[in-house]
Amino acid sequence: MKTLMTIAVIGAAFIGEWGEGATVVILFAISEALESYSMDKARQSIRSLMDIAPKEALIRRGNQEITVEVDDIQISDIMIVKPGQKIAMDGIVVKGLSAVNQAAITGESVPVAKTVDDEVFAGTLNEEGLLEIRVTKHVDDTTIAKIIHLVEEAQAERAPSQAFVDRFAKYYTPLIMLVALGVAVVPPILFEADWDKWIYQGLAALVVGCPCALIISTPVAIVTAIGNAARNGVLIKGGIHLEEMASIKAIAFDKTGTLTRGIPAVIDFLPQQNKDSKELLSIIAALENGSQHPLASAIMEKAEQENLPYHSVSIEDFSSIIGKGIKGKINGETYYVGSPNLFEEILLNGIPSNLKSQISELQNQGKTVMAAGTTTEVMGLIAVADVLRENSKSVIQKLHTLGIQKTIMLTGDNAGTAKAIGKQVGVSDLQSELLPQDKLTFIKELRGKYGRVAMVGDGVNDAPALAASTVGIAMGGAGTDTALETADIALMADDLGKLPFTVKLSRKALTIIKQNITFSLGIKLLALLLVIPGWLTLWIAIFADMGATLIVTLNGLRLLRVKDK
Image 1 (cartoon, one colour):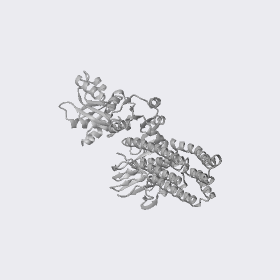
Image 2 (cartoon, rainbow, N blue to C red):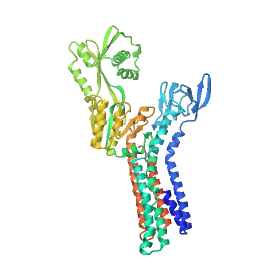
Image 3 (cartoon, rainbow, N blue to C red):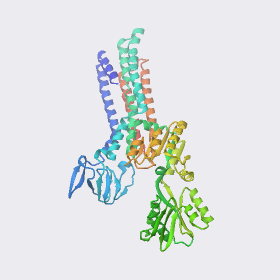
Image 4 (tube, rainbow, N blue to C red):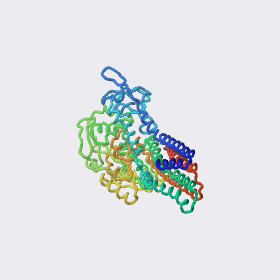
């Protein structure tokens, strides 16, 4: 670009067009300044990220409270954050209760309640109470520092279209020089035309040929889109992933922790007739309090929601029946809680047929069923299930509306549970009873069928499948190192609702890149055609070049207006 301009200016001086040569220099400088300004504007979202976290914090050391620069804060220091202040470092709350606005890091607009043992991030805003936080990371390792570093790297990385433009420019510059030379010498030599006029036309062709607009066409769009995504809680780790995301035909979802919350909850509590539901739930929760079973916490949470005093229930002879359930004596009566199979064994005539049909109906809905009772009767049934995220169904609908051909749920669960969840969420396909290596194989098959496939997972057990997909998307980037490292895109707020926005943004970015490349090449061709009748002037040439640069830049900046709706 600079080579072409330099030759044009020297040539203008050589044929005595000093004024036009000077104008070329001035307008080129203005064009460069505008280009720098627009790229700076696109990168501003990253600068605003850098300014989010405070540069110092109030630290308690011994009996003293001192203000310390963040670079000098040590791991395990106790940081005191007052209401209305920003949190300067990542850490764990050791004292206090507050609501923390995490929008800057995760993009979620609603403040999150934080109390003892909860994790907090640098750059987030403490809204209500006084918090004492034990620092867990050095300033360079905080989540915000990692995000800034990754986004900067992403914005610098060349996307496929940018790599194409760079390769194209390598051959384009010498080609334009040959064209300009031909314009300058062929008419005077072959047709005895005026040398001054055609040298001038050749110089104008050099200026028109300047690939300013072409070179800026891709990076301005990539930088703007990645910056906009970061501001909305989506971390895209490079232009290549942004472009690939725009062409995705199928998206596979892990079930647990992605489409669902990953935390079991009591969905149905069905005491039998003539049984006091509160008393029975207290007995069950008291027994589960001594259990190591993963579903015990769901039952205790249900009892706590109903304010039942299960801690005060006295249990004797508590024991675990391996693989089947638990038992314990309360007020001289032995109670059992466990799988329906346990009651098939301990009841004289097994489970009554009406209860059996109720159990199988609940199991067909994808729920895990437990029974509670004594050696003479089943007193109640409890159905526990992993609950869907509130927005899973609407996200799948939006993706289908956006034209994603296939949405596939992948899970290690049994076919019954998978079918029930798949029906609720509205995915077009599902695969159940998969091990991590099976997910990997399935993603490879999908790529063979659809070409470009995205995989959405929680970034830990889904790592192989995330790596094998065209674009790996991890849930919960904030505080999850695995998600930040494994995935190509991380949804920082653990919010699946950001996925349709990401698809929309990447498609818009690819459209704008194509528009920019087509327009910048088209306008060059049009201006060069003016050479044939000899109408091309240095003025037209520089305005064509500068105008094209400005238009592609402003077109790229339109990506800042893509909103998460």
